[in-house]
Image (cartoon, rainbow, N blue to C red; front, side, top):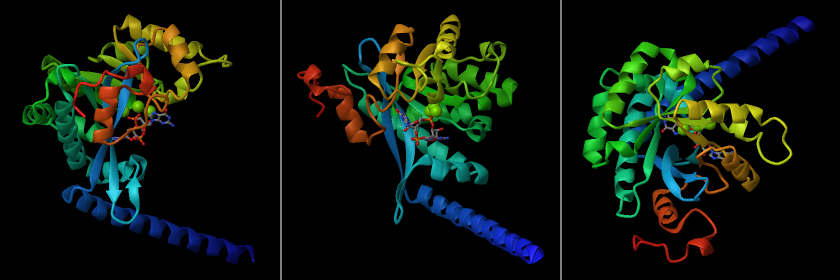
Length: 291
Ligand code: C2E
Ligand code: MG
Ligand code: MG
Ligand code: MG
């Protein structure tokens, strides 16, 4: 009995694996089509100055406008894109599209930065620097306004090459952010060698600050470290005003999170830029005629 059941379990398990493999294969060819046929869209989430509450920039976050499944979040297709190598053409599309959006947001009053998430395979491309320079030129976007977000683990992966690539980009004026900081267990001495400008504290740490939490000392240490390295500090995933107040007190400069805005489409992002992120009453009359 036990033996039969064991076999059955294995059969079911194999069928499951098979279905999963097929599912991935299907997803992969669908994603290929999606890139070709322009089904990908970017949403933009503002970064806010914790002291002035003004928007300093946006992060471009990709979504897949799937013909039958609706708007899919990156978690549903970025892993498959990474495994299949499709992340390279996908990332190229995101970079150019985000630069165009960033260039289009520029006005006399507003010069928001535009942050783009970069994966390991993009960074490893020998022509990556040229590609970034070309995207900026093509979009008419000043290099100083582009921020490349790279996770801690990717930054530490192939440090020699990474340092050379990032240094070349920074020579052009492009800024670099360490994304999801704190999740990669990297040591300070390693990070200090990296040519970076911005440190984004991962949401899992930001969740721990605010009223009633005792566990905030780690975030204080991260902010202190970030200051000593002369980096701009951004808190990710801020959802409550208590967190924003605490972070401002702790001398964190910028915040990003649902408290101000979820990622939104380009017209909404432009509206946010002109009107401010929230409490419209406080910003009445600040419009610059863009909308
Ligand atoms: P990330 O770069 O760390 O982006 C922040 C994620 O946190 C976004 O999720 C954003 O919507 C979410 N978020 C922001 N504020 C809050 C908040 O207050 N509460 C909560 N619960 N979540 C918040 P999203 O858009 O689903 O993206 C997930 C991840 O997918 C990104 O994490 C990034 O690693 C990856 N990703 C997104 N777009 C791209 C892309 O164009 N290229 C690459 N390589 N990766 C991308
Ligand atoms: Mg990011
Ligand atoms: Mg992040
Ligand atoms: Mg994160």
